Amino acid sequence: MVKRGQSELLSTIIYIGFALLIGISMLSYVAFVISGYRDNILLSNHLTNEASSILVNTISFDDKSSTLWILLKRVDGSQNNFFVAIDSGINYISCNAIYVYNPHNDDDGILCNSPTDCIRSTSIYVGSMDGVYIPWEGVIRSFLQYARTVGYTISDTIYICSIENICRYSQASGLCSENNIVKIRLPSEALKARIFIATFYSGKPYIVGVYEVSLR
Image (cartoon, rainbow, N blue to C red; front, top):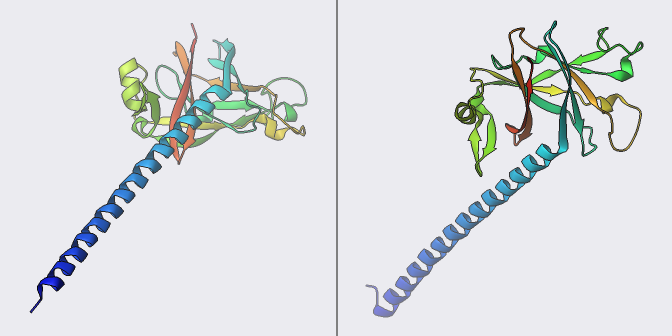
């Protein structure tokens, strides 16, 4: 038989247990919210920094060979590679059609006239546009949703290509100041090209910039 004093003590212990359980749950929830907020801040900072670190300019377009030449430069002076996706207005270009000129292996000064002059880009993401993300109107959306809204090319497959930063082949130390000249082979019927600048965060690809070129 439980006496009154023992019953009150037991009730108090139970109430304390419930209070501790609720407190621990609240602390776990707050820690989860803070962690998510911190990760969102880090993601936002990364996307902003990458978007402001890369310069894109048109050099020329050869309509006979449907070859577009562009300049890529990292204004932050880093030797990091460039990640791009190229929309020809018809489809997204395979990485096999994108090269970067390497002046450190060029013996005659003629761009890409020998196999060692130009380095072919490599695929770093090949898959659905729904698996690529973009900051849009203050939130992160899928690139597929964004492309549908703004009228960009829709395709089952998008290629994100890694283009070597040719500063890695230089003997110079310190900040990278070299320009990267990129050769892009386009379909002969292409009327425009869009160069999407991409980056990766926690293994996911994000679009952080677009540069559009009219070809005709």
